[in-house]
Each structure stands twice: as C-alpha cells, then as structure tokens.
Amino acid sequence: MFVQKTDKKVAIFLADGTEMIEALTPVDLLFRAGIPVSTVAVSDKPLIRSSHDTLIVTDMTVDEVHFDDYDMLVLPGGMPGTVNLENCETLKDAVVRFHSEGKQLAAICAAPTILAHLGLLKGHPATCHTVRMDELAEYGADVKEDPVVVTDNMILSRGVGTAIDFSLAIISHYLGEEAAQRVADSIVYPCKG
Image (cartoon, rainbow, N blue to C red; front, side, top):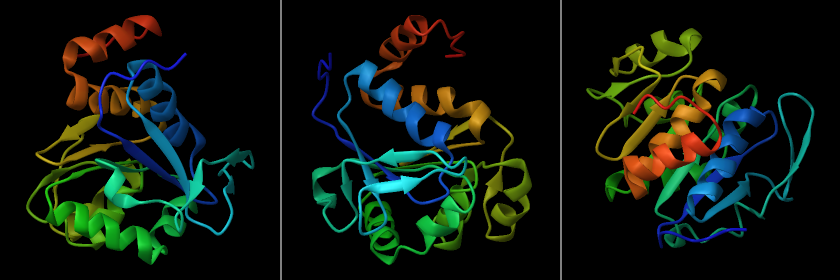
C-alpha cells in the first residue's frame, strides 16, 4: 500500500526501446519510499515495448501530462529508447524549461546524452554508460566514473547495474539519507550512503 511521504512528484518517461530495469526500478523504489511517481509514454498511446520486448502500460501519454504538476523528470536509457526520448520535442522542451527553472532532472545509462546534446551538462560533472562517456566529454561535461553523480538539479547514473543507487539518490534528494537507507534495508540492498 502506498503511503505518501512528500508532496513532490516525479514523472518517468518511457519510449519504445526503453531499458525496463532503468525505468521500473525507480518506480518501485520511489513507491516504497512514499514519493508519488507517474509513468509517461512518449507516444500517442500509454503502451510501450521495452528494449527486451516486454510491454509496459504507462499512466499517461506525453500529450496528457501536465509538466507543472511535477518536480522531477526522469529519463531512463536503453536503445533505441534514448533515441526515441530525444526525438520527442515536447519532452525536450520540458527538460530545457525544468533546467532553466532549477527544477530537478534525472537520467541514467545513455539518457544523460540527451541532456548533453541540449547543452545542459557543459562544465558540469556527469556520468553515463561507459560506451557514451566520450560523447558527454565532446559536449563539454566533466565526465566521472562514479555510479551516480549528483549536482544541484541533476542526478545522473551509469546503467542497469546502478539503477538501485540511482533510485536511492532520488529518494535521498527528497526524503533524506535515512529514508533512502530504510528503503535499501527493506530490499536487502547494501546501501553505500
């Protein structure tokens, strides 16, 4: 049963080809923490096919979402999911607006390249999947190999293997480290703090 612990709301965007673990791990762990989360398909129907050919039903489509209702936008990776997210002009416009307003953005795996292409990582510490790190550097990011990189208004992570750490960083941002540790303990995960 969901017990809401904050008024902050998170929207996670999914496209055909999205990496399922990177999309659904935050959904699961934020639910456990009590953070309201919605899944949004960047298509005309609330159904996407993951990079592993699994169908996922989302809460709404990008044309139905009211961006001002949300405090954080989350971009999971996967291929061709990242490309499909980046091809959504409505989402990119919202990402740029969120960044300019100092609102929170989070991206994992290849998805931080979307932020790089928009010029949002230039001069900032950032991370992504190993095979895309050169691309971040090319767009001016200060590339790190940390599992999760947290800046003032961004949380970035490396990939499937860091999806739990990524989710816990989002929880910690909104509810504090103790709440993240409680969730880590509840799933028997050795939280690194």
